[in-house]
Image (spheres, rainbow over the protein chains, first blue to last red):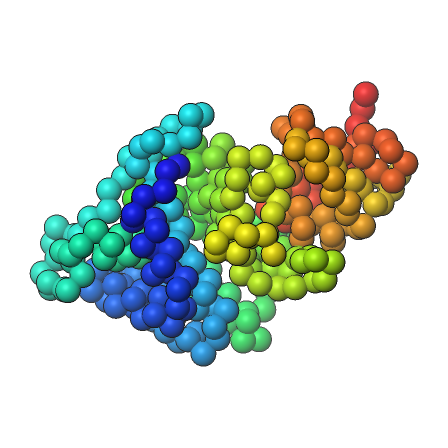
Length: 233
Length: 71
């Protein structure tokens, strides 16, 4: 994976301001996609809870990550060639599409992920929102719950170049963890390569609960709970 | 899930870069290691409190295997 302007712009769009991220997500969902609207309305509905905003914004980051797999990848990785683009059937011209590369990156990343994954993603997030609000609580010990990664296949198929990604061994799994929290994981051949997580962990000897990221090529790198800038908590 | 009681905590992992990490209990392993397979991470050394080599598998915060390694 190499870092390109699209990725950098998406990081800014996804994390610089959760509120702005949610607004952009909502707008892009309405403009570009049907299913994505549901997800983004959910994001909007959850706008009073900054953590959810951040997580939803982070979900667009994953979409952007998938967009960044455009050649020049790791030596041992099959490059995934994808393109960020404005929809061909776009009838409403927006200031951002067509537009400069940074805008296309932000909107493209959001649109590709939210639009493509929207319908699949909604099941999990709406359940999660309900769960966080104290309703729709399931049996956390059930086999269904523990096997409850929703939309893994659908998400993989939904990301840009999803078929190619799957062929190269990539899958995306998102949902709640069995012992609390949730996350979005990118795996290659079943091995975790990238994750956006929200759950408790130890930081400098104290248990904390924060949005964090995992990435790296080695076990020692992957175990680190990183902030958006890559610095371990 | 395979968990044998004879594995004693704390569990210590020496990672491929020489870094050591100690995990006090299963909760510590699950939430702080999160995803690890000692069968795949051959350059990492995982040992229990008695210094015995162990097999450890955690996948997406689910502890799947914690047992003494068969030598």
